[in-house]
Amino acid sequence: PPPPTTSCILEMSKVCAIFGGSRGIGQAVAQLLAQKGYCVAVIARNLDRAQATVDRLGAGHLALSCDITKEEAIQKTFKEIENKLGHISYLVNAAGINRDGLLLRTKSEDMISQLQTNLLGTMLTCKTAVKSMIQQQGGAIVNVGMYT
Image 1 (tube, rainbow, N blue to C red):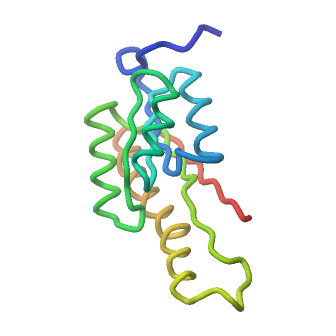
Image 2: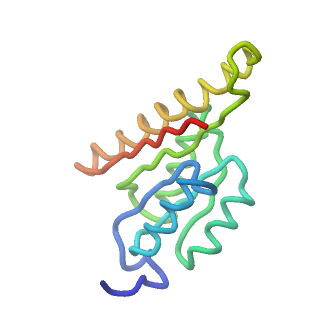
């Protein structure tokens, strides 16, 4: 296969938004897709971590911060990606949080926070992506679930 391009913006039409792309599985997916020549938007709660990941990917990628429990924030993030990289054809949801694993010790507010991030956040990013993908008549979504 040909080597990855130094600037994918001009050469590739496929853009991937990776929520939770600054660490773990999401970061590994970002690295793989960037090597394959995709334009990657790494989205995380912590912009510095997202930027550190993007800095290792090479030119033409984007780092953003987003609270995935807020639909308006997700919509704004998608618009920014589309303005800077183009239409989003691929969505990877790898964002998630994990609190104390013992149910008896888990506070109710921690349970709610987990549900908002891990379930609602995934649903909201999918909802926003699907609207765009329907208009483009194509796309793919990968939701990564993890339990530690």
